[in-house]
Image 1: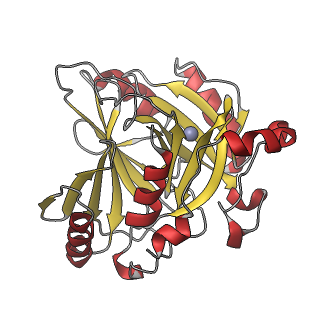
Image 2: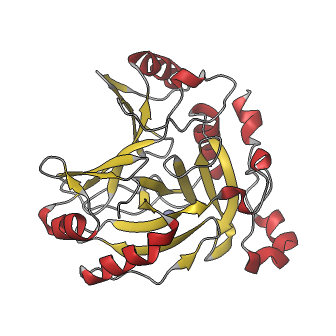
Amino acid sequence: MKLEGIHHVTSITADAPRNVEFYAGTLGLRLVKKSVNQDDPTVYHLFYADELGRAGSDMTFFEYPGARRGRAGAGMIHRVTFRVASEEALDFWEKRLGADGVTVEREEGSLRFEDPEGLGLELAVVETDDEPLIADHPEIPKELALQGFDSVRAYAHNPDASRSLFEEALVFEPDGDASWEIRGEKRGSTYSYDTPLPEPGIQGAGTVHHVAWASQMDEHEAWRERALQAGAAPTPVIDRFYFKSVYFREPSGVLFEIATIGPGFATDEPLEHLGERLSLPPDYEHLREQLEPVLTPLPDPRAVCAR
Ligand code: ZN
């Protein structure tokens, strides 16, 4: 039993329209689901991914309008890295992000920058046999596009505190001192810790809320059981409609989720129209007429693409 790398990464935005412009417009991901927070249906939960909405490419955001800027500290993820194919891709992104006023830091094989709210992002040239998970965007040639997640990096004072849960229960493979590979049959990712800054973290706009690891459908309960046996305190299985989830905090403080690979985003709307219409969980469907006028107006992501 192996986890199939990163399923999705969920972060916080205070500015949903700008978030759509950046992730769908500038970075060229597809807005595959426009839904609401299951705990507060007056605010969005936005999902960006490849063209098919596959696990391994899915960057999601909770909208907290007016939330103050956060800051990554101990027990928080501070960088999300996407794969690209080549140095030529980095040339393209250096230019494209620069043209949008984004400050970039280029090194061999890597381009670092922040999203409009300060979330740490990186594009890395990675040699892999994993299938590239690519979205269609009129301004971005396929061979230069983002190809899905490579890794996330978090801050921890004592990464060893997490080691037994990772290596014994979750079958993370050690890959250096404070780094692990999480690789299943089809896909893999890496997870690493860095030494935190002295200032404590603040959960807020521009920070990561949690990382989800991808589970095969029939192994999900078993992963929950393993986390429980290893001393974590997993939630019951929660039905997120597009996948099933359990959550627990790992010993260094980062919120983990284990999410099933299916049923996926085409479960409540056709693949060719993903994300165009507001998708409501079944319990909220009767509130559609009240909710639609209350939600922040968003730009059309595909019009943003063609701007
Ligand atoms: Zn999640």
